[in-house]
Image (cartoon, rainbow, N blue to C red):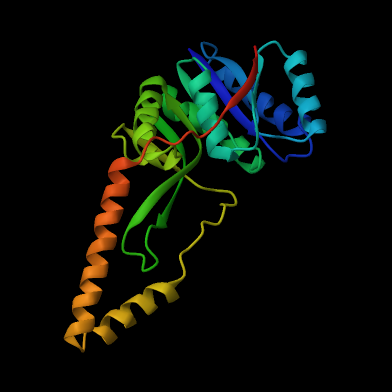
Length: 245
């Protein structure tokens, strides 16, 4: 079984310490599951020259390391998408070096997939989708997915734009491990614009001319949004500059 370890790099100051930690964890995993072999895909997500030099040195030092360079900084999701599209393996382990505390749980990820038979396994956090908290979404960050799950994820991304959150919706058997480290804060929409809109609707509803005009405006907005949704093309999440195998 071949596992592609996808590691995006952007502003991390040192390459060697987190990479050695990951390699140590996977070396321990190799003793538990000797049938699993690992390739490393280091994604240069628009890093500075010094970091790019370190990535090239790591790629030259270890033959199992591959270096994928993006044309500029596309963010963690864009780099993860580039790695998934470029690498070929039986499973794909996506790690974020910004959260090194999670590296200790790599054996849990492999155990859940190899011994538990799960197609998607990772660290998940249920966060409210709306500010009033009536609907929750599962957000993935570090995760391990099989090849069929990867294909389903990329097919869903072609329609809606790439996001690891889609892993919660593509229908594969999942095992969600508890998030045990710091979680990136998600942006929340301010309540004040919504309150202003509700207040304007109530205020304008007292007079029928303004109510009719408001309904026409709202109908136009809904129609425009519907047309925009139908005409929306798949977004390009990354542009590859070079690949060093």
